[in-house]
Amino acid sequence: MSKPAGASAASTLALLAPATVLFATFVLHPIADNVWLSLHDWDGAGAKSWVGLGNYRELAGDRTFAIALANNLRWLLLYALAPPLGLTLALLLCRTARGMRLVRSLFFMPFVISQVVVGLMFAWFFNGRFGLFDHLLRAAGLAPAALLEGDQAIYGLVLAGLWPQVAYCMILYLTGIATLRADLVEAARLDGAGGWALLRHVVLPQLRPVHFIAVMVCTVSALRSFDLVMVMTGGGPHRSSSVLASYLYEQVFTSGRYGYGAALATVLLALMSGIIVTLLWRLLRAERR
Amino acid sequence: MTFPAPLRSTGARAAYALGVGALLVVWMLPLLGVAITSLRPEEALARGEVWAWPRELAWDNYATVFRTSHIGRLIANSFAVTLASVAGALACATLAGHALAKHDFRGRHLLLAIFVGGNLVPFQTLMLPVRDLMLALGLYDTRWALIVFHVAFQTGFCTLFMRNFIRELPDELLEAARLEGASEWAVLRHVVLPLVRPALAGVAVLVFTFVWNDYFWSLVLVQSEDVRPLTAGLQTLRGMWQTSWSLVSAASIVAALAPVTMFFLMQQHLIAGLTYGARRDTDRA
Image (cartoon, rainbow over all chains, first blue to last red):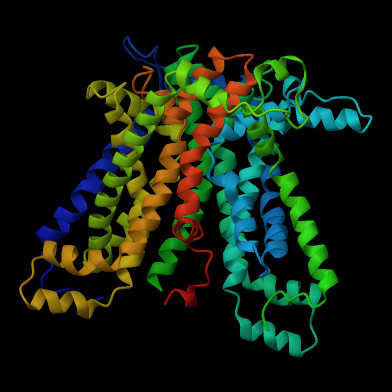
């Protein structure tokens, strides 16, 4: 890229200023500020008292923290199902036939609906008294589960989350499949490859960038899970379905423990930073090429 | 020949259509359940008629939702916050994206990386400092708190998107305008902007969907029902109508309406934005 004649340093600054100032004020500075807060005890109003790593030491012995962390990991592991399920749906729906465009749109629709609404839908779906889920279990002669009212509530939440997540992975794979290189597929066909062999040796390798993106977006949303927890169980019963995000919200706004909440938020950021670093490394490498 | 191979026989095509149709019904069950419930008369629900096809459709439930709650207010709040956020994020991102794409300065890769990386930070990490900041600025519990934050945050990924799009424009085009003495602003306004309309549409519909559906910041940055957006307000309504599932369902459907309509109107643009990067790189040139 050559330096354009008319682009002065002043114009560069002016163009960058609004975005940079806003982003620095409301995103970057708060990250540092949150770490600073986590080193204090604070009730949100009075004076902050310095406790150093005290909040973090307390985390180590906090049972609910352990439960929330384990639930975030469960969420992460189960979200690993979304890419293969999305791929399966995409392979099924990528054909051209009448009405397929509408069908694909309908399959994708869960992703554009607010998670609050998704949560309400599934709270209704899993409801122990009149939900369809237990209705079907009873019809099949099984005991009703009342999924959201017991210790397995977390699985009900993840199941609800998988609905839009699989839809997103599906649309990623549909886009990937639509841009497959026809010449490679053709060549493999001429070599007699079909069905599985074609999928395994020609199609899946070409979809590698899509696998990467799908895994990344699933990891990010698993760590971000909050809305469904708040809407469907509020972290209960007995905090058994808490995740880090909902537990820290509770610590701050119910118990008034701002410093402790900030420490939890820092842990969440640390978990996310692995992904952030991976993505940035890829971005910068692609730019330098 | 394309992948997958086309289905040849009529039988195979019929089986395929049937299978897809059945799967679609199962996939949509949670949504269908709520849609049907929203049209079921209260009395039928009370009688325990929960999953049977309703004998009469109570469109009246929707009227009741609007008559007995402030949902109209909530919808207006959502629109105000969302539209202002879309406009703000588009403006900031186009300006910054242009500089990052077409100006050569030290640290531009780093700046881009910061915009992208900041966008992946969990909301909860920003929660307390942003809330304090809004309190200090006197914006807490106003629509502005939501608008300012959404603009700042969404600008991150929007800038990447706009920058990648603007970078594809040939330098000669900008150069020619500059040689004729056009200011940088004029170049952006009259040369770049008309060419990046599809990107603007894509970013707009993405930001619309994200901001409309936001729940977390609607909980953290505002608390009065007067300014609360629909997602957060829905929880209040749910508390109010505890046992009236048909009303809760109707309100949920109303809340889903705007993003779903937006999706069907702007499908191509939304999907292009969401799947950015899932295309093979050679196709972008």
